[in-house]
Amino acid sequence: MESSIFKAYDIRGAYPDEINEKTVEIIASAVAKKFRGKIVVGYDARLSSPALYKAAMRGLTNKEVRIVPAGLVTTPMLYFLVNKLRAAGGIMVTASHNPKNFNGLKVVGPKAAMISGTEILKWVPLETGHQRRP
Image (tube, rainbow, N blue to C red):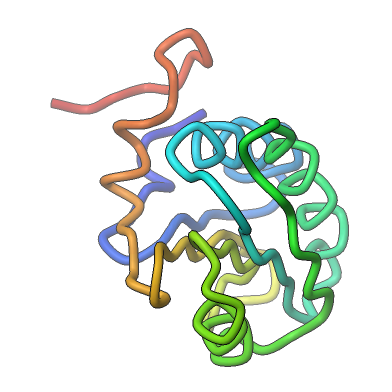
């Protein structure tokens, strides 16, 4: 896993070379270790998003986390659901405005507060083989 996919506001890269089901599952697992309670998970209309959505939900398997599957939603709708359901956080599978061969994750905490990709990089275990740059 390349550390370059962890951006200031989100996590994104070319699919499947930089971000794929394996990387998403590892990242979601790291997120699950930080949150307790409900986590809302959604995805956008990109062709690769349904598979990454399923990988995110697999990664969130943790007895302290209750997954709330939102399915195909917009990013603002996911943020709304995090607030409405008073969830501990949310994961949106999307690469926003990037080209169709990209995908990624937007992760939010309580009240849909954005969590940067650079912060999430600190949560990913070293044994995953990702390359941290100084």
